[in-house]
Structures are given as C-alpha cells and as structure tokens.
Image 1: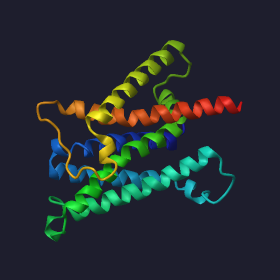
Image 2: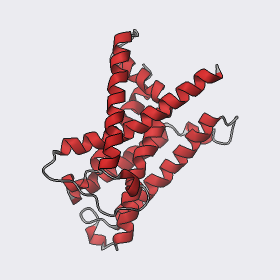
Image 3: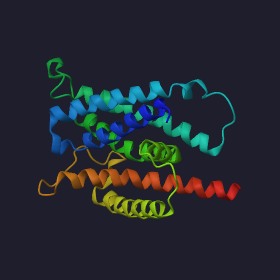
Length: 223
C-alpha cells in the first residue's frame, strides 16, 4: 500500500475521532477541550499539506457535478475550521487565559454552530471519497479478496448506524445547532459518554451513507 495514503488515512481517522471528542465539551471540561481543539486544527493543517496538490488544480480541468460538490465542501470546511479556531482561541479559559481574551455569548454561539457544521461537511467529504477510504482500510487490514458476506454485513451495519444517526440528529437537536440555535450544549450526566460519542459518529455517518449511495446511483444511471 502507498505509504502516503496510509498516513492520510491514519491522520484522517485521528482527526475525525478528536473532532468528535471536541464536541464532548460537557464531558471533557475546558482544558481537555481546548487541547483537543488545537490538536484537531493541527491535524486539519497536516491533511491540507498532504493534499496540497488539490489546491494547485482547483482552476484546471472540467468541473463535473461531483467535482463542484467536492470543491464547495472543501472550501466550506476551510472556512468552518478557521471560524472554529478563531472563536475557540478568543474564548479560551485554560490554554490562553493569560491573554485575557474577550469571549462572550456571540462567540460561543458561532463556535458551537461551526463545530456542528463539521458533522455534515466531513460526512459529505468522506462520502465522496468513501470508495478510496474502504479500499485503503481493506489493504491495511490485509483483505485482498472481495467477500460478499462481509460486504452484506458491512452494509447492514452501515444502514443501522445511519438509522441511529437520524434518531440522534433529533435527540441532539442538531438542526437547530446548525443555524445558531444553541450557544450551550447539554448532556445528561447519567447517560454514558460513549453514547454521546456514538451519537455524534452516527450523525456524521448519515451524511457519509447518503452521499456515497446518491453518487453510486447517479454513476449507474450515467452508465
């Protein structure tokens, strides 16, 4: 397997896990949340450096529907992550307390909104590249042959996970969070933190699932 692709997959996996952990602010507390946030942005920069060739070709070639969506999602992710970093630093309560930065409710609301926009944007981004991701995972795991049973099991799990993600979207009121509806996030301490992590992961999985299969259907229709 190409070492560069392996590094990309590992970095992207770490980025996704840490982003979901960063959403668990009510569980982790201030200091851990800020350190995780800085790590997320560091990995985001590393991802962009590894994929810098994309920026060099952005004004070249023909734009298909798929390429238009990929470009729009990538640009939106850059703006979202930048907003997340800036608003996060300006309301730091642990790492940068010595700077006495302003903070405020408006910044918190923008920060929360940007954080939750990461779920659909990263989900769509992954869905558009899901075939490459799965191929890379199979190669890293030594799965060189196709297995129909394994494929069916994976699809059933993906469908169940996506269904849980739809429920979790309403349970966590994600749609309100996407449009400046919340400045604080609440999590019942009696509910295990792992459920929160699974809920956030499943919400992202909904967008991966829908994006991947929509473009799969469109591809078959073109053929």
